View 1 (tube, one colour):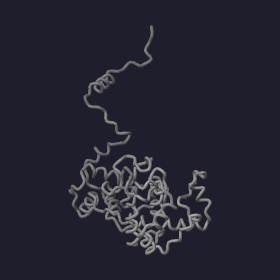
View 2: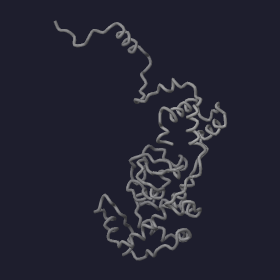
View 3: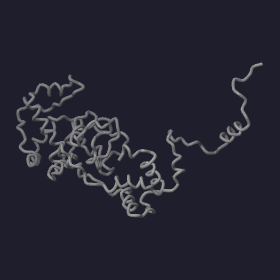
View 4: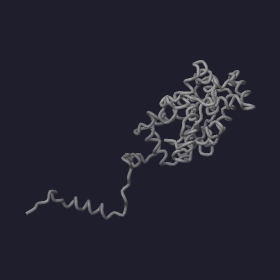
Length: 291
């Protein structure tokens, strides 16, 4: 006689299976996230420790100084940077600007999951709002200055797909931009000798055989330094503009202001959001990295 390789089910186990199989409710996939805290913490009042952490999030202080950018708070630099931010000529095709992927109408980010410019980017474009407070830039933190981040998309082939020589020639050849540049950064170098300053060139570290890298390497060290200074200055102007993009009146800010003033019944954010905030500041430990 063949015996089953499974042990006999006891009556309580059978009842459990029956109750699961007959339920009209579908199991909720929480993605492995523990949601029990939402039931346990029915009281949305913040603890004393959570209030102390909330006070570190609100009010938003003025952005810290940027020691890498002497023009960070220069209004003229910010004005030039604003113009550059929206100028589609700062792309290989003349069709894309910084604002293509950082759209003001969508919180200076992109409504699409992956941004479309010269190509499809590998990640969603993060907002540039409040980035003056960042220590690191891009999702992976690969840039450590605001102005360095601003320059990256210009030369990225899937984004604006231009190059630093094309950009500085654009500035030099424009009827108005040289005057705007020189009022902030000093005299533009003479770029008229294209044997020294070709129309298109950039360093391409991961593709030394790229034609623009070969052209770049053929330039003298001094001429490359000259180009890099102008290109960096343009990044610093864009960063000066982005530094002004501060938002400090979100529903959370209004909730925090009211709560810290004693209005614990404030409804600027929902009770569920307050429970999430408690978890964020408390047991969830979100605050440890996102402060």
